[in-house]
Length: 172
Image 1 (cartoon, helix red, strand yellow):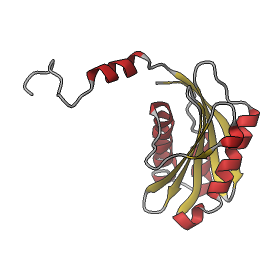
Image 2 (image 1 turned 90 degrees about the horizontal axis):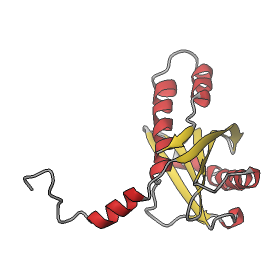
Image 3 (image 1 turned 45 degrees about the horizontal axis):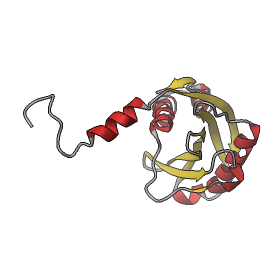
């Protein structure tokens, strides 16, 4: 391919343009931090237009996260996690992201029908964060690196800085 205006044959132009045409910002907001299942957990809500994350959805998500985090030490967890409660356009999602040994992360994705938090179940193999969820996780990667890994001073102060460093507003 020699020209910038030529599309590679492998690129489904119509599908990509349809996806781009439907792309919009979603509201993201922190729901606080808490200790759950031996982890310090930062919790976020992500809301599609017309959807909200209320107390019931947050409680259900934390119940799912707690069950997952209960065995996280066996997967090398270092005790810090981020939980995303996503009221999506096509259903509900809960992501549990845990920092583990070796500069790695563990990610679990749970899915369910919209507005039925009691039906959240593990997502299919290979399911990864959507663009809005990835925006929050990218912020959290930077916050973890900046405050915990590259921070100075006592660990308690570094964790307090990490805990306070949140993202809020329109997620693109």
